[in-house]
Amino acid sequence: MKVVMMVDDDPRLIRLMKSQLERELNCRVYGVADARHAVNMALLLNPDVIVLDVAMPDHDGGEVASQLRACQQLSRVPIIFYSGLLTGPEAAQLKQQGCRQTYVSKLETLWGLTSVIRREFNWCSADATVSSVLLQPT
Image (cartoon, rainbow, N blue to C red; front, side, top):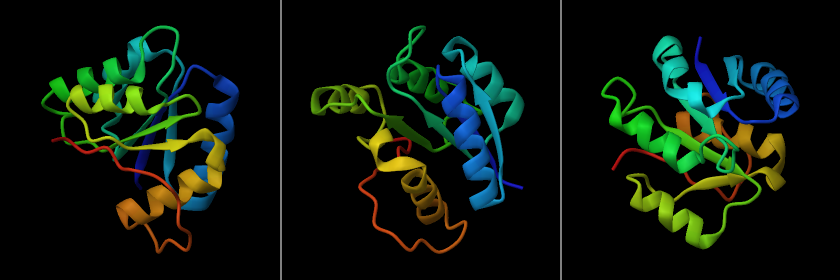
């Protein structure tokens, strides 16, 4: 079974996304509410994809992505930034931190995130067009 690790400081959103993604994608979703633990949890879980919030109180998503990319075991795990706050300059900064510029807006709903994961990972056919970008190692 595919594994999705979600890093977001909002436990309610993690619960909501867990329910939606597990039902729609038949995958296992693990939530990490404290970004400081993201790398260690990813090492334990060995996820197929990481959904990463950009704006968190402990670390921003770019810092976490850089830490993930620096770890050999995690350097190839795709990351999808999921944020309601990402602006053009912030996306450019994330690109400078070693990742392609791409994200899914929280405003696009959980259905949008589900569609992106389906399409990008060929978990099943996607039937929607969603403005998104998959973050892959450069």
